[in-house]
Length: 264
Image (cartoon, rainbow, N blue to C red; front, side, top):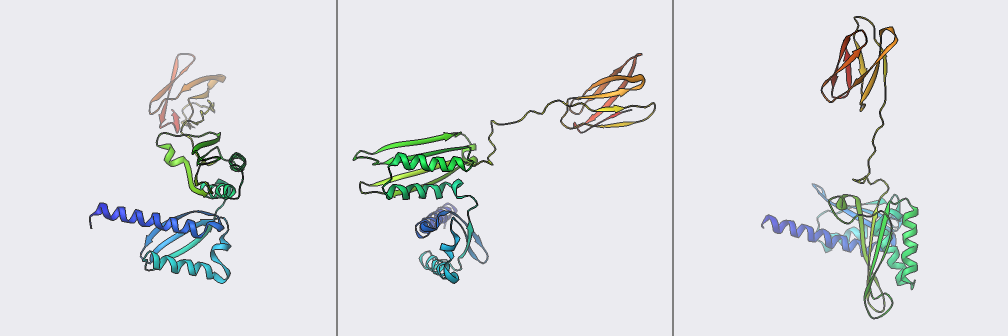
């Protein structure tokens, strides 16, 4: 089998397995899964809101799910590990399923959308976007969007920072697509950075002695010299700095990678 076809088949298998888990564990608050091949078999790590509903009494339900996966997907030794989602309100797939459930129960789409949006932002998310597409109120399909906070749509950071969840809500008029995108509180945005302020370090200098000045991300260091005079050292990357002292004397400070400066 060509390598390209092998990759496509593995990706298709993971997609079908993830779809099966989403349908089987929807009542437990399915929040995604990680699939890893190991020498012992296929390792499946399932993230859910309610682990007890997946395991069942005495592990009966999880054994049944494991057997179904083994037969349906022809896996030798599937091993399922159930992990409780740390914060369900910051899991986009869990929140998408909640929103779809509200729509299926008859909630007006604007009320349901704003309700889920408030829950996500209250959990500390930096930004959230919810998109509903389908026959929301009549026979004509349309799209409604609910946005709050900070959201990015282009560039490489989208793949690393934005977490996505998608599901569908089944209504009498047809299905409604539910797409939830969240930026987690721990996300490091590329346009957010801090500039450190200048700091000063004062060191007493004695005659014929060597003094080491620790410099970390500082641009200036103040060195106290004999006769209570002070000189300012301008620190540059991997370059020496000259201290001009009164009475026409000079002292040179060697700087190494902005970490230490030595005055002889």
